[in-house]
Image (cartoon, rainbow, N blue to C red; front, side, top):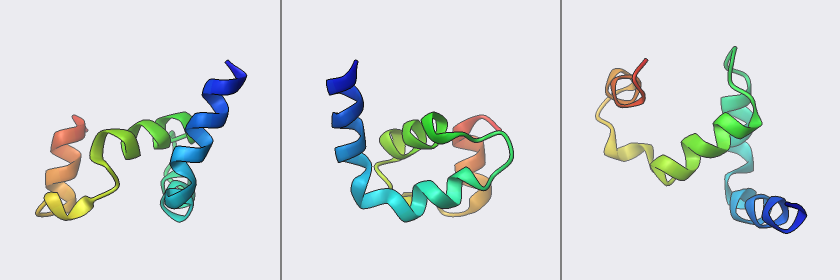
Amino acid sequence: MKRLGERIEEAMAPFRSVLHLLDTIPGIKQATAEVTIAETGGDMSRFSSAEHLASWAGV
């Protein structure tokens, strides 16, 4: 578990600022923010709007 946690932290390092912003959303904690980054690749340009991203996320 420790090695996995270290690997996740390493992979998320380039996205620290994005993770911090996601963490400001009520109900979003670090693990959820990490999953969001993992699923989207951190590239929000593939979503034409915030509504499109919310729809993709099922919100």
